[in-house]
Image 1 (tube, rainbow, N blue to C red):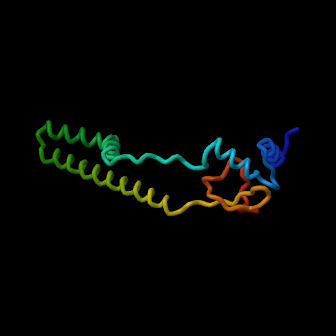
Image 2: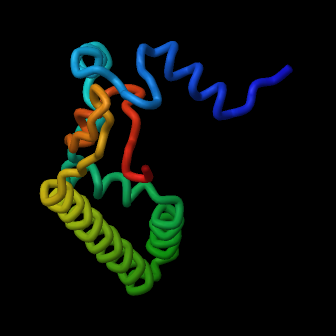
Image 3: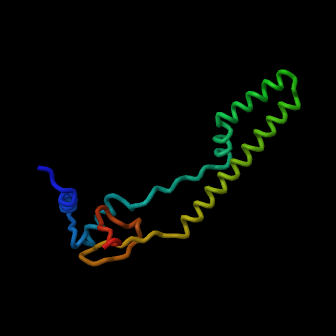
Length: 143
């Protein structure tokens, strides 16, 4: 007979050395944090502006426009070819600049707010940084 989802969750919590009523002990939480690391995304290395420009320039639509400009220039339609190339250059520069500034804005926003969580430690509700939240810490915000 299959167990109910709540019974299975309780069993899993018990297997990890925790309990629904008491949560993890402070020592267990510290050990899990040491063993598994913080509950946070790895810092993403910021792409340089030239890398962003290369990604923008490799867009299939941009490549199609460069191909069209090359055909225009081969057919000696210099004004049309130059206009297409100028449009491509402006598009790549503008898109790259906007993406670079958006990355910068996201990085600045992530510095402003540190997320907090309420965890059950040794039977007491404790506010901790969410990056310090150990595996199977019981989130108490809804309780």
